[in-house]
Length: 197
Image 1 (cartoon, rainbow, N blue to C red):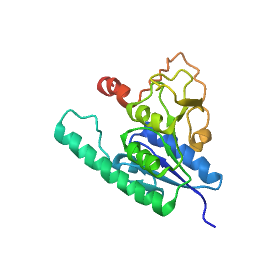
Image 2: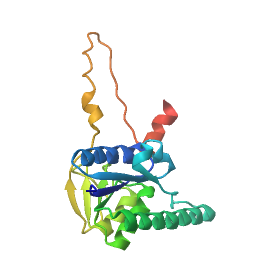
Image 3: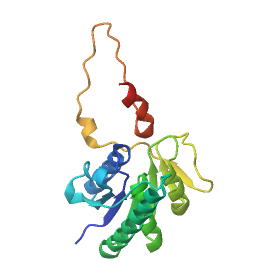
Image 4: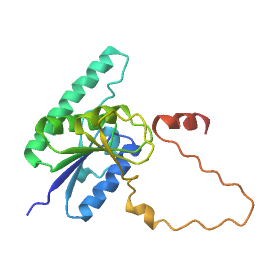
């Protein structure tokens, strides 16, 4: 008997892909089949056997030609996802944000496939803000997540973490007076660190 399929759509950066991989791992451990939908950037982070690569470009471009190219990619990715839904019939489509997740969630809406979203950041991104209006449900990582659209039901589930993190041994305590500093940044907010470090 075939395992029920859950499709997960995540933008091409690690901030979207790694939480999706954590959920996919848990789903597989609980008897589900999973398929990750992403763009060429995200494909570098996902094993080939468990992914479908979709064309995707940011629609938030000022250049009209780039915007047209992004809309063409959106159309092609939506058609590819519609074909996937018709053939494989996923039980649920889970979106993790980023513009590569837009077409799969659009296809889910067009086919009445149940869908939900997860937001990893404390400020709801553009793609998830638009998509949340369609799904009506949004899982959030942080209690004070802002930029939420009105009428969307939210549930704080926290940040999904891959089990590999639980296998990391604790760091040994330092016995000197060395100051340890941890700097964390992600997505667009990391640009300042990339420039300075």
